[in-house]
Length: 443
Image 1 (tube, one colour):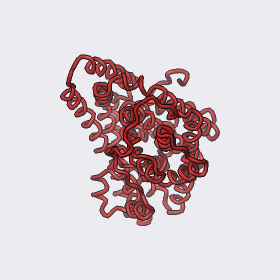
Image 2 (image 1 turned 90 degrees about the horizontal axis):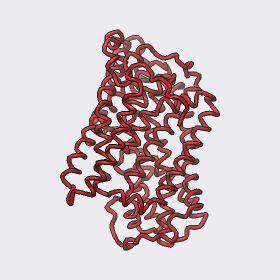
Image 3 (image 1 turned 135 degrees about the vertical axis):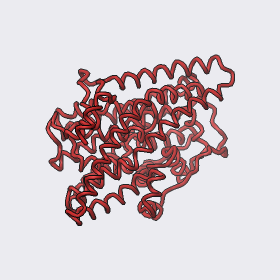
Image 4 (image 1 turned 180 degrees about the horizontal axis):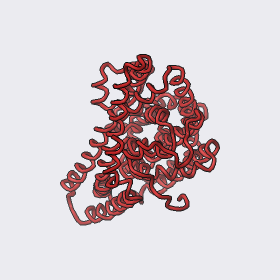
């Protein structure tokens, strides 16, 4: 199978060096220009926006089509090859320790920055009426709801709805069972391993649609909101993006502390999926490519296929930072002073509620709405954010990819399963194409 994949591997996006990255960047810039022109010249761009949105929707559905089978196949095979439940538990514990630490840093950073910059104080924007409805359901996530949601009633249903955490739970049981059966499950495990390589190949084919999806997503957003909204919220967005840069710096320092000089190569290796997540405002869109790049970087398939999907449920660093930043911003806008004790309580609440964000549309806004209700802050304050939420979501999504990339590489290193640079699985290279050449210094 590997040799057959190698024959057509030359046609994969990855084999073209940085070509796909440049196409995505081109789609991003073109989308901004076209969106600005449409906003300025077309009185009612509704039909154009709907057409552009259709392209993005098709791309995201193609990605979702991949995720379920890919997570199940890679995770079940990885656990089956680990051989025992103790190894799974050890890796899971290390991952959760990292996730909790990263969550605490992200939430605290957002809280510190919003209190330092105070973007909501003296806001010149007209505040919405406190009784206005944002249209975002303020649903909290209780412990009972979380535990109940954790276990799938049917793996088919979990895959149909792309519930990553439920797929992970089933895959863990399935992989452990395969390891327990031993040689009798060998054929099944080999078949699943073949499926994982096929799904990675499908990913590379789907990636050719990415530049068009990026163009459509950005053009539709600019056509609807216009560049003016960026000027109005320029200070708020600038301060949030500065926070994102600081969070990236902290993540890089954490990676450097464990991986040393290879941290630079790690960030370089995932620039394409990070850019894709940024441009589409969807970290889910970058999942298949991120997994492939991590394995090419040298992360163990067993660790990467386990830690990465867990991270998509428990380690959304960019989204968590935004939650504290946005909640306090809205409180400042309404002139509500939160005490230090209230802000610490909010941080602890978000440590729990943010773990239920995975798989929820506009997840950050849902969690923020629930948090506002708990602290008697008008839910209508969310209306202040809706106009620029897409641009903020772009940064959140890219940061989520970076955070999970670092977590996976660090746990691989802790497990002693990080291959030396340049030493990668031949089968995987056949499936996803050769690594891209170094573009020079990290930017």
